[in-house]
Length: 174
Image 1 (cartoon, one colour):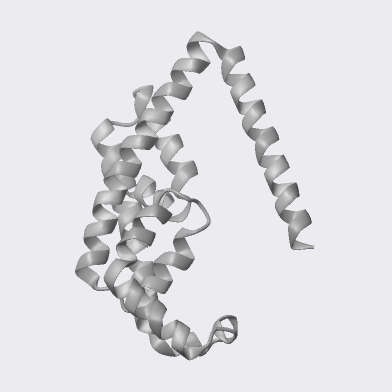
Image 2 (tube, rainbow, N blue to C red):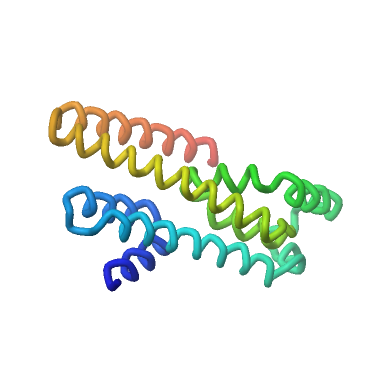
């Protein structure tokens, strides 16, 4: 039970890192698989619902905050209607794109996405995300055991690509 609670809280706070760590521990038998998967699901699902709720509590008056002041009222109204009809697409996609979750989940609450649609989208997206993460952990651990040089090469290429993308983005911003 303590493992479950610790894992759930960590998954809520640092989703990717704690999920990979907990699944890695489960893979080597230090944590039971039901505890690992259940705690990751509960932690991520709960924090994502809390983010939507925070947006709902802030409500439409949040759109008067400085960060939204440059958007004309008619465009915000169109965005609100779009989120209410098709916000599930952005919510589901942001589940897989780190750095987009907090703004998308909070704004879905602010802009009035329905609770039932949001929860259903979160449930399905979290299940798919957990399965994808499980697969990734399995592949990485398998590569680390069978061909560590290939894994090192893949990591080096990803780090290089990330560094180049970051520099290009930074250059465009200035």
